[in-house]
Amino acid sequence: MTSNMTSIQPVSSVNETFFHPTFYIRGLYNIPHATHYYVFLSFVYTVTVLGNSFIMGIIYLERSLHTAKYVAVFNLAFSDLCGSSALIPKLLDMFLFDNQYISYGACLANMFFVLFFMTLQSLTLVAMAYDRVVAICLPLRYHAIVTKTTMSVIIGIMWFVSVTINALLVSLFTRLSFCRSTTVNSYFCDVGPLITLACNDTSINSIIGYVCTAVLLYIPLLLITISYICIGFALRKIAHVQQTKAMKTCTSHVILVALFYVPILSVYTAAFTTSVDANIWIINTGLTQTIPSMLNPIIYTLKTEEVMHAIKVLYKRSNLKPTKINKL
Image (cartoon, rainbow, N blue to C red; front, top):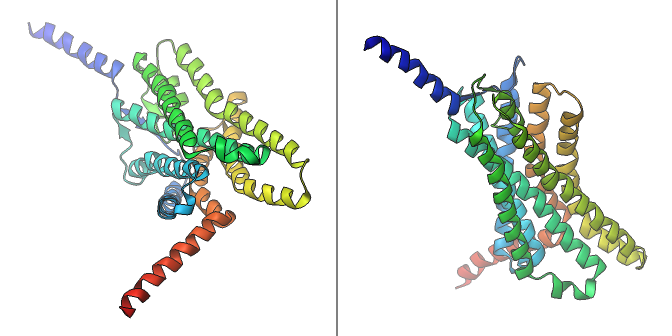
């Protein structure tokens, strides 16, 4: 009886590890002073929270910004804030406080939220490109076509697409068995490093991963590029003064697109074509997922006249209130 029990016990333990392991997130490996990188990310996160909260507050408080365009800008700021919150606090907890073990369920949740908000950022940039292309190519019909209701519906569809695709991607991991190493060579529960740890067929996961990357990164960038080609043709038909004014309205969006897509697509394309060192991958992807979220509100504050005007109006309004109270 005792011998039977002892023979059954290891099987139970193996099955538990086989299906629901606890993962170890390795992070940067054999790099001296790696904590400096994580401390820098904590600074990035602080600026991201303050900047995006500030932009959302300005849009909420100033009625002149209650337009279709700023529905998309608000959504971008929200997805930037949530995307950084899904990634950086957990990353700091793991690598600054040595909590690098993560449960199976928490790992999948971490993967979903990081990818979900990154997808939302990508699709929101497409919505903002749609706003600009209609404003410049069809200026007389702009207010009839791009309404707050229309933009809200577009944003709602983007949320649905983001949830659906990423839920499918993450749910496919539940069919995988992890009987090899449980050390994830990344800084969060990333798709690629997790797939390499599985010991059964991962072809479906790999295919869906490639499809999601194409649908959520390459195709949105293609749509944005097409929209700016249309804008380029439209600008050729108008006067130089109007050209300059129209181009100024696009400057902020072009910078946001470059900040988001160029670094991340460079890293992903390099990973598809060559073997990238794990430490280089971690540093590059970590920065490409966090720096744009920090810079976006700064760019919109400094480069957009409407936002700067709204800040001045709110500042004057806040200064007038105490004066009126004192007079009373």
